[in-house]
Image (tube, rainbow, N blue to C red; front, top):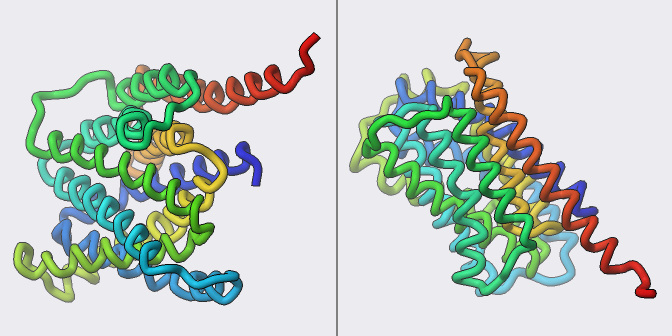
Length: 298
């Protein structure tokens, strides 16, 4: 897979997540966040399990204990990001949550430099700034006073940043994207379902009423999109992946307008154009630099 193809795979994952954001929002009127996230990723794990088993049979070697632990660490980061985003939606607006969650586009290169001493191509920094500006404009260009949900959305962005970095790191070293996906889904689901009975009521009626949302985000938004993420990250860098995945806000805004009748403000269209420009920029500039450096010197 080429880097361009990988980035297009990440773009598809972001589009699916954009649709999932709508389902996540509507489900909160029917079921608690811990039950929702736990059931969501339980379904995702079941959906990915047969493909992970096929991957294991074709693999040249079994996964080591250390690699299973690494995959579980990604699952803990996924749990942190998913549950803080879902709980945050109880006390903040979709607009604020969408913008603040998009902060991972800044967190990823910063964490990469501080924790891994990996310095991205210089174009990532202006690309991250442009993406953040585009997300802000897409959200309407304004934020109200920060609520508890807003603060949780910022924490969520930090966890997503860690998840993106770790997923890219471990899938590259192991070459087992489906095993990684299965493990992170199972760990996230287990954490939520262990906590849920102590903090939230539940009933069969609540599960059935939120059934469509749970199935969509479980099979499509989680099972498919997160697998696409880890597959795409085998062939691109974490900072570049963050840029393309940040287009989730773009697709969320567009699908919100189409499916929920939300009106995209004029600034939102400008935000869409800026995000698209940032994605094109981080794709083209490194390629031009690579070609220029490979030219024979005269």
